[in-house]
Amino acid sequence: MKLIKMKSLILSLVVTSALLAGCAAKEAPVAETPAVEAPATETPAAETPAAEPVVDAVTTASLVDNEAAFEAGISKDGTWIISTLKDLTFDKELVLDGEFKNGKKNDDGTDAIQRKIALYTQDENKTVTNRFTLTAPKLTVTSPNARIQGGTFVGDVYVEAENFSIVDAKVEGNVYFASEELKSTFKLEKEGTVSGATEVKK
Image (cartoon, rainbow, N blue to C red; front, side, top):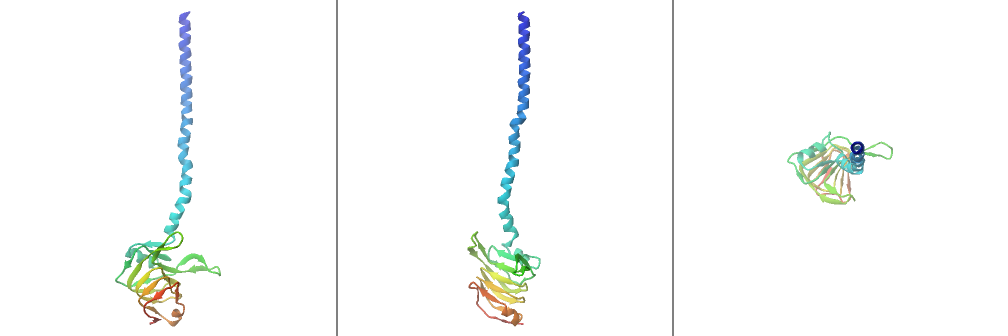
């Protein structure tokens, strides 16, 4: 009799152990599920707002800190705005070439054409934080609606396109125009200055 009770007790323990083991095996995936799902819920939060400003900053301008990058930026295959991050010096003529859209619209709905050499940096409030000097013996401007803004150009500027302007910047040299008509569209804005002559020179 004792032997039968003993066998029954052992059998009960075996069955109970098997059930507990089975429950543990079933519960394991449940415990693991949140850990697997957590990265999926975190990914959108990390990607959404933070990535966009970085992309915008890179794509809206050609930010240059060396002479080769500046030359590429002002070429006909460059960008509408070329922003320098330091003083740059050349011993050869530079040409601001090509027609570019700035992403805005004119009052009549047409695409706005503009070109800008930005010799400055600014903060998020558009306050100028640094101004730079670009030096070259000659800068020829063939891009329409072009401007030099925010810093200093040392050298002579030869203008062969309409609506050239100097905005909050200095030209330490002369500004020559290919015709009287082009000279008539020239503007000095926001205390822009030219130390030398502003005249027609063919």
